[in-house]
Image (tube, rainbow, N blue to C red):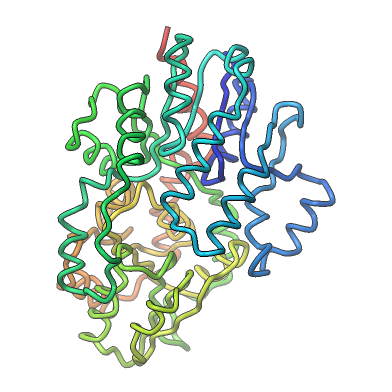
Length: 406
């Protein structure tokens, strides 16, 4: 089988390309731009990982794949990024980028393929073109359906209006594109059960949907955590949040819970991009540290310096940071809207709380303040997850999915 994999950006598509290639399934990989592993450009991107403007290039390094299989459309990506930096509205700009990307893939590339894998909001034109040729299209849906979490976002807006984005309906063109993707896709692949449930609740045929959670490089995170002290004796207990510091990630609930607790010997670290509006909304609280954006290569060290990971998010697809935290020996506090239900199969691995409940979040924080976790014990429990939640297992499941069709 020859698979055409298409993604205008990154997400986990570079990982998937490598896994398909290792199994002899990758025909072509189409993306915005990619840097060949081992090239001078890739080396420069690696050196620039901590730079504000160039740091993201390290996620574009593609290894193990013959250059002849990789096709890029860099000017489409650069044009979209430039428009965003000049203040363009994200949804329309990205929708136009995704449309141009799909239409730029030539017909003969589809003719050379036996199946197509494309990603949500950038697959509707490919789905239409595939249907016209009798090709199966697998839609990788990376996030839950927006309609499934609308009540939670509305409650967030009522309780924390300053944290909520101004009311804005999704552009009709985007809604139509997603509906087209769902109706034409042969299979829809999601990372967790919550994303599946939101699709089904929005009218998507459940027979089409398959769950394939992502993976993580367990050894990388475990190695960074080996030298960490647990439980901490000479420093405060540290809670870590990693992700964009925004409302839908549950940050205002986390700040309110921290205010209620007012712990004397604990810290809460917020790591991730924080805009001017959000920064102004974060009060000065004892133990609260706003770290800003942390380069990805420094993330394992960040886990190694902390003790409990907290992600009270209202909407995700499957949050990779949860896997990274568990691989580092950190128990997690999260909601079932993040993929946590697929991971926490033992109380020693963490707490799953009700989404949007500051009371439940406060109780979970207090639990770990009273009972500090032991990193080695958490790591021993998490070790059972290492194989099923590895990138190799992720690739094996994709290979099985592709073989489902006649």
